[in-house]
Image 1 (cartoon, rainbow, N blue to C red):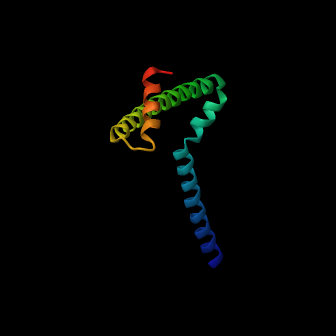
Image 2 (cartoon, rainbow, N blue to C red):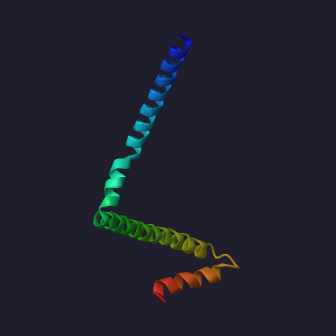
Length: 99
């Protein structure tokens, strides 16, 4: 009688673990990923669009970062710091002349 109870207990534990694994696999969207791998042209298209989005994001981010940096460099020039004021002024002048 004890062996049958132990088997039932183990089966319930296994059933719960299998249900958990099935849920995790669905959360990972493994079926969609395998379907994507089966169609190489779709995979190339998705990766191309992702690359374009990354490139545009990097360009926009770098432009904003550069503008903020130049803004603060101009503010430093106005402070007229003795050691780096001339260097910063030259950098700002070169950027404004687009050299």
